[in-house]
Amino acid sequence: MNARYSIGIDLGTTNSVLAYCPLADTAAIPRVLPIPQIVASGTIEPRDSLPSFCYLPPGNEQAALRLPWEAEPPQFSVGVLARDRAAEVPDRVVVGAKSWLAYPRVDRRGPILPWDAGPEVPKISPLEASVRYLRHLVEAWNHARPEALISDQVVVLTVPASFDPAARDLTRQAALSAGLPESLVLLEEPQAALYRWLAGHADRWRDELHAGDELLVVDVGGGTTDLTLIRLVDCDGSVDLQRCAVGNHLLVGGDNMDLAIAHWMSEKFASQGRSLDPWQNISLWHACRATKERLLGEGGPESETISVFQRGSRLIGGTITTSLHRQELTDFLLRGFFPPCDASARPEPVLASGFQDIGLQYEADPAITRHLAAFLTDHHSLPTHLLFNGGVFRAAPLRSAVAQQITTWCAGRSPLRLGGAIDLDHAVALGGAYYGWSKQRGGIRIRGGTARSFYIGIESSGPAIPGAPRPLRALCVAPLGMEEGTEADVPGQEVGLIVGRPAKFRFFSSTTRKEDQPGQRLQNLNTGELIESDPIEMTLSADEVTTDHPLVPVHFQSRVTELGMFQLWCRSASSDQSWKMEFNAREDAQVARS
Image (cartoon, rainbow, N blue to C red):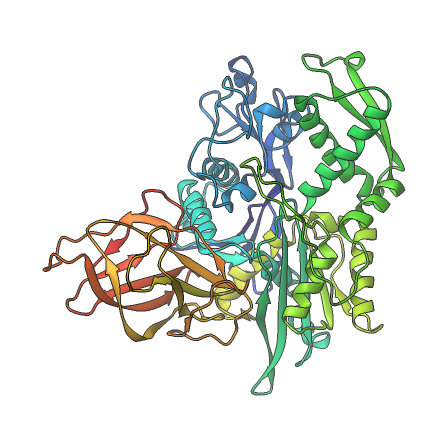
């Protein structure tokens, strides 16, 4: 491969961005590629980001949605038009596909989106929606740079630091299906945001960051909150960056805020004697998202009118409206999502209803400050530096509230804030492009390896008890921080692997158990430190097993590939057979055998 560019792609919950940097440049100056997209029926314009919305139009609209690289009218449209149509026909627009992609309690390969759409709407899977967004970016690049196809370039695709192996694998599958190269690298989004800051400081970053400093990245995007700690360590007289902790996958972000505002506005409508039906409530949610972004953006208006169409009407006379002021919106979001709290605070438990919709399970406590306090307490950190990322922090009052809260926890010592608000929409993609350039040239790297330790569930032997499962213990197979391109044999006695008949394999991970090493066994799985990932149900091939007994003694070997993917190999103790466990979410998951 004769790559000419490093390309960074931010596949965002709300917006996706592509940035690039020529590999031949001696100084990296990453740039954003404008993305052509449908902004109105029959109108194509380039924009710096691609809204991560997919509109499924009726047949009579498809001809006006063709893009320059499409030979036939498409059956869908992604981008600005799709985002705008969400407020008019919400049951025909896919939203939040990235959050669904990370949600193990649904079939992420099945046609489930738009969620709750009627039978007349053709549904697609979260995986397919992700493919469509990425394919649009691929086609936009190839259309702009036909002499340097994206499949021949260095590509860095960013993912939340809190994504588990299944969600990472699905993201990678979507990328390959969209036409990205096999050699693509997955990079954690908070790290990409820091790489963006490093790109703008060259060697001057050491003037602001010193050995012993600890940087907190607070990334609040459309669907999730990502928390990451990066420590500055002395390495033979020079300073290295080392990612030392990441938070759990927190499903709280801009989407929650939009839903909260919509609930608030629906109460306003109710006070006017206007009750909304379910369709209008979804439409109101999308209208509130657009209003929030305008009011809280730099130079936003003092107030805006929120309108909701009556079903079947597109006329102004067929709408109901209310107004929202910037200051009251700011106060509302601060009270609900960034309330002041003690450093010892933790998310508040909520007694859940016994019956719930099988939809996205947002965090029970939406107070991001309480989640942040618990994260810093769990990792014994009082950060010296602070970096914001994510579209939510375009609102200056929200950045200030978080910074002030951390200052209070640090006994009045304000952490130094890196960067500004200008890059919040594009920082992750720009940082990804810079990372690819830096990796090719041997530049600065943030070290840290895997963001969590990994475990497998092993069922204890013993007599069967009617109605009671056998006890389960966890075996550590990879430590937190295992570096890319390394492997580790898991010591200890052999474990029986079921082959030739259906079995369920259970996996766990932890972002807090930093001392566990391969081979360590945990008897108590109920401490709250282990998070269970998707179990995999499959039948392992038994073609070469020489005994009729379904239990094959194996030992384990863990690998983290150069591309950042985690693999677990099960090697037979009595032959040269081995099985590679694939950490994905496929119901028909396969296992490579060698």
